[in-house]
Image (cartoon, rainbow, N blue to C red):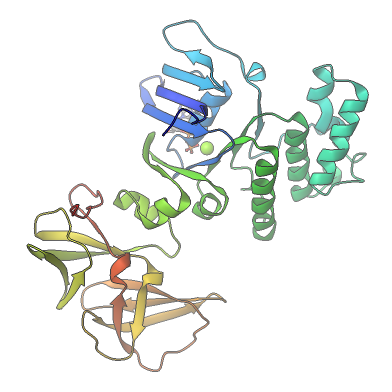
Amino acid sequence: MNGMRAEPEIVLKGIRKSYGSQVAIPGLDLECARGSFVTLLGPSGCGKTTTLRIIAGLEQPTQGEVVLAGRTVYASGSNLFVPPEKRGLGFIFQNYALWPNMKVDRNVTLALTEAGLARDVVDGRLREALGKVQLEGYAERYPSELSGGQQQRVAVARLLAARNSILLMDEPLSNLDAVLRTEMRGQLKRLSRELGATTVYVTHDQVEALTMSDQIVVMRGGVIEQQGTPYEIYHHPANRFVAEFIGDPRINILPATLRRDGTSAAVELEDTTIPLPFVPAHAPGPVLLAIRPEAVALLDGLSPGAIPASLDVLQPTGAQTIASLNTKGARVTALIARFVQTLAHEKVWLAFDPARIALFDPQTGMRIASTST
Ligand SMILES: Nc1ncnc2c1ncn2[C@@H]1O[C@H](COP(=O)(O)OP(=O)(O)O)[C@@H](O)[C@H]1O
Ligand SMILES: [Mg+2]
């Protein structure tokens, strides 16, 4: 790192938030790089909305500090609190909150005219914003005259027109049908990039997180379990919770036994020994073997390191097929990268791609690293 490294646009330091005696966030530190798309991902109640509202200034933390674009906007201990409208951010929430009594043009430009921008500037921004969300010609409609997806695009246009450097979005796509959701995912990602904005996006949907983000922050119980790129979160989950939360179909997690002899290591699963391409930094004994369904291959015949299994059910989804299998003592899901309705034999052997095997500590759930060599 040299001195050129940009200041992060959003910094949360030691944030704690309680509601009465209930602690929603025990202590959270987060940095979002300027211009990045950061997704807060986790199950319902894990503190995503609370964190976003703290950034926005809609919620005051019990403790900690919030810094936006180098400016401290909240610090416990001092009386510093910059209100939401003075933080230079735009937001979009699950219910798009358009004003029902105002036409599209007024909904998009209200904040601009209230800020005293000149008429021609406002008109220019309106035209550009409606163009970007493909709603030219809709300026004179009331929200009730638009579909859900169109209303959502008006909300996006309003964000665009405001040109804030920070965008906050809380589950903005959850009211849309599946087709529209996929389309809007791409659109929001593109818009955030075009604006060069720093975006914090909240969702419980791991597909949204994987498809849209530069960084994913996985949360549970008000705590960050892992922050990383979608690739890191998917391929190198820090613990069992992250591994299981990300990926559909779910990652396989199987009880196994670690064996090692100085320079090499293997795991035993049922009656099969699978050599590992790395030496884990963990004592021999019980471990959890984790392998993604797409890293499980189905073989017709016995091969070293392959596990005998029988087919339970095949579920073709179009481009791929989910295969559910039973080994002697476990259920394993495999993902076949084509449309399959029947297998030649119900008895198969499962080959795990050794490079895709991860091990977790059965007690702590933490990922077991390799010994550095
Ligand atoms: N206004 C509130 N009063 C009391 N508890 C709240 C309030 N808002 C949120 N909580 C609690 O804080 C926790 C985190 O909530 P939230 O941030 O809304 O989670 P998420 O958005 O991840 O679903 C939950 O346990 C929730 O019940
Ligand atoms: Mg929420």
